[in-house]
Image (cartoon, rainbow, N blue to C red; front, side):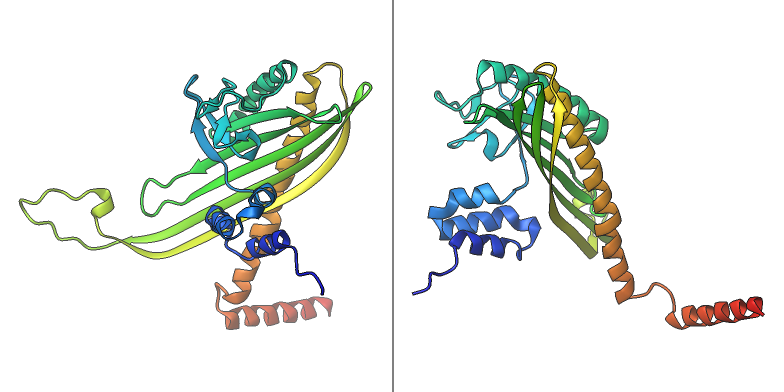
Length: 293
């Protein structure tokens, strides 16, 4: 008898057809249906990053599978797990020193490019002698009124490093998850009654007349060789690669994806009178014909 399709492949195929904005709920639902494949699914599907606060330092950090051990998450600032975990996985002292420097460097990068948000860097050793890491960046925009847009940007940059003498080979896999929600609301007419307390902004009769939600993810890979003069050279090298990759993906989102969405909308429903546009084209052809004569 022929074997059926691999359950993990089937779940991943299903995830690609479900709304990206509900990825966390969909993953949890699939895990409940097939708990034996939870690790494979969680390792293959990127989910929006969660923001947590380090109890020891009071600084925010990002939680994901790369700093998770059991039900606890390790903070890059204090190197402690929350909830506390006695034998949790931690980098070696040498790698921890590099991790601290990387977090400070990418915290500056975050402030330059995001002007807010949260960043975290986690490093771990590989069995072949090299090391790997992940650079996480997240910025969320929450609406303060019913008609303001909201959204979030999540960047996950996973890299592997293999030193070759005074050179190092880097393999970078970058994923960007973007979610945008725009709302159009109209203020309803109100009647104020003397003696009644004034209504709050959330109770003042806003009528929703439309909402557009765009969400999705993009993944790209690259491999490069860079010179290594000292341990901190790895931070500089990966920083250059991540900066270049984010700029490329940001431009690709704006020019290709949003541009294509705009073109599709214009093809479905024109903003101008099509008859008027047709007459203008005919007039242009006539003018060109006169000029050629």
